[in-house]
Image (tube, rainbow, N blue to C red; front, side):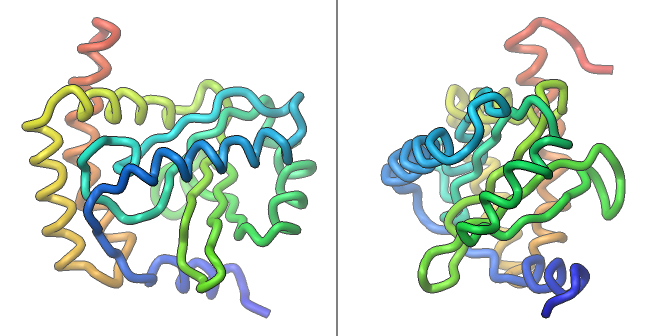
Length: 194
């Protein structure tokens, strides 16, 4: 049986593959959302949002649907949702929001197809988590083609350079994402981040 360290090493070294945008991604999100609404305890489940590059029309992306899910309690999620998800084959990680071991932690799941390829990443957080700022980034790129193109080119370049290192690939995108998220948050809410 794999240790947690071995599991983390395995998933972080899987290939980074960027493909052309597919309109099927919206359908895959909607299908998974319906599946989750049927499967999960309603009292724990709130918003379910499609985010990340697969949620941005015409954006090349890893063909993995990122889903942000608001739960009322992460403690109850670990107790009630995790067993349901693992029973159905989802891989579960109690994941730090930043770095290797920096709280707040959240529930993260990988769903795979019959060939073992990732199809979905599910991020379960409570309503006050900063993860919700990612929706500002998504919406801003949908509205701003030039910035979306800059992000697409950055992702393609990094995927070519760090094909088997998902950690570095993600880290090297983070400055761009933070800068644009800050701009987007100010644009949509009129509030400057500190």
